[in-house]
Length: 218
Image (tube, rainbow, N blue to C red; front, top):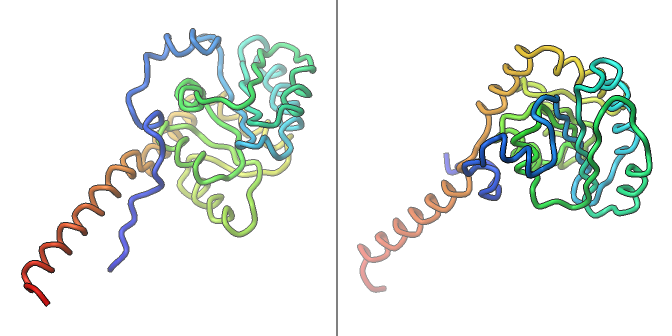
């Protein structure tokens, strides 16, 4: 009864009002008439990112040629960014980025995201109503994030690139499923956690101050 859970604080860019979708797409160099998959590897670009990108682009290009685009965020891993940039991809547009300060904008325009089970990314994706495919997790601290996503119906988990690609492309092929997952994500999102935490702390301080004054000097 002494615990108050408000959610994970995230930057305003994830819960504030976004720019119009068309403007965002133009600024990000993306097409409005194509399905968008966002693939991220965390701030350090770790994990099996190249194999996941290969699998997703191959499946997307085969299932809906010329109708898909993939944005790959490699974080600070420049070696991985160059490695992926050097490849060619058939029938799908691929945009490869290093560290980006516009993740919130990419999440706003994407149809789904592939990511490791980091708490920050999951919280941000939920706020943006983004179906989430988890590709890995750190034992212990991130393990509980997998059932959170799966059981709340806004994503799934697999460490196998082929299964990840199958799942993502099946979502994109079923608009009703995608919409349901988007709503499920928003239902569990905590967009105002930072403000609520600050307000709660302020109330606690006020209550403590009022109590001290009512007791008088010691």
